[in-house]
Image (cartoon, rainbow over all chains, first blue to last red):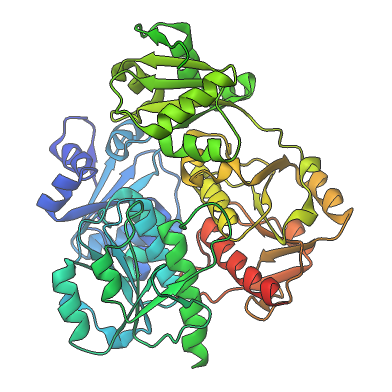
Length: 269
Length: 269
């Protein structure tokens, strides 16, 4: 087992660095993000991604998966650091911190990294502000065999602690791209791809619609929905029953209902 | 317009009372809950529910819906109170509080209040810990024309600010019942009702399953899923494709995908 560093002071620069990663501005400057908990770190490892820095509470319970993780991080030249639970609480901002956390380099989120031929379904979120919704969309994307999540315009940060947690590890397996609408639309139209949105304007029944792979399922901002011009640009507008008083679903729910419907059509097509 | 009271001090007993409603223990003791924002309060009013106390920021923008709400509350003998935005911030615990909030009596959540013949679909959540998930399930229930949400065992509080907000007003339109499994199962079996859960044990494909109204769609705790005995008691166990690395969906997502599928079957049945 490699040598571990032990940190005993709250004012240690590494503690300050780790804490700063809870803040989007610092994440963007450092191009690093924080992942908490053995389960997520093990998901990352299973996806071939190791943290540059592995932080463990001194009084953690022993676990073979943690030993394996530590060995891999050390072998890859990463940093392994122990600290008191009280200091780790400061890092994670929680009273009951996970006993382990890791720092990862942010992934390159250029649209041009995505290979649309890799998967029949892609999810697209426009100006989605809730990191939990983004993480849930990543998790749903994993379940339906999507290639990834494309974030348009001013979305929440997919590398926030909340989004990573809600993704249940899918942040490491789903492709993630960030683009403006003006970048996305020409990229989409540069090759095959059907753009689909839930809409009330001249829509098909979502159960009867003719989904085609690669199918890009787009949902909009939680309170505003999609801009009209974005709906106009869609190849397919679909509608789901709304039998109650409300006129919309939660954005991550709408994406999931659509994605499972499209999946059923595309698997039998 | 009725007389309004104005509160100018942070230490006013009403301010303390309102703040206390952010805490579950106090909500249960007072049997009251807090609803923030004109949109939710207007949803409540449209559903025939008025707050006992209406609280408004002194510097709020005028709005005809707020005037209508104030008039209705006053006519019903409710209390209308103004306070500085700074004090209202203390009540709502947010830097940018909504300019209006209301206090409602909690609803009676006895199982025996539910009339299962009223709706083809009912949602059931077991030991669900995330109030956002509960609220989202209420919102989804409204959309699919469900009768309500039944909370089994130790669920989060459906009257928490987070759940009420995520419900987008459905907390006022969906039935809500709270029960233990040992209360629920005899009630369920006392009349028609199909109990359905997503499960990996001997399941049907969720697209091919024979849903029957009234259909009770049950999802389990976010990390543990449903207890085995609960799955055993189901009339139908269904499975959804899980094509990625993860073995489960977010609980509110699973409920929604199932609910929309059951709805499609039951509408064409």
